[in-house]
Length: 96
Image (cartoon, rainbow, N blue to C red; front, side, top):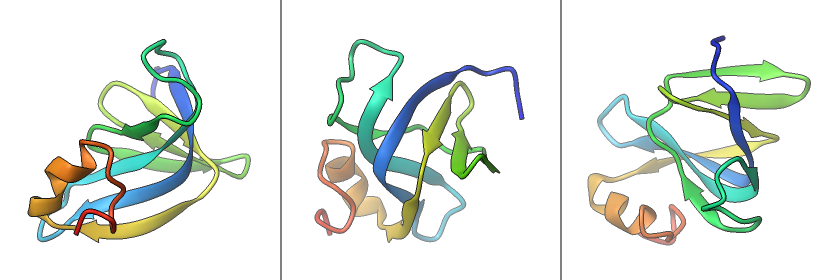
């Protein structure tokens, strides 16, 4: 995988595929996070996903700088127009 450290664990995750592109990112809620900026239950949107693996019944999503542990997810397709709403904390599907 990489030498990156885990940044956190997320729940109620949606793996967001931006329509007509290869860009994928996570939207979910924090279970725990290394940064004090995030508390349990806060919404979280990751940067672009570069890799995913499965380890011990968890999905491990990798961005360029971080690893996130996820116990399950729902894939969704999002439009360019919905990105700003998602990045403001409106869950995908609720922003369309």
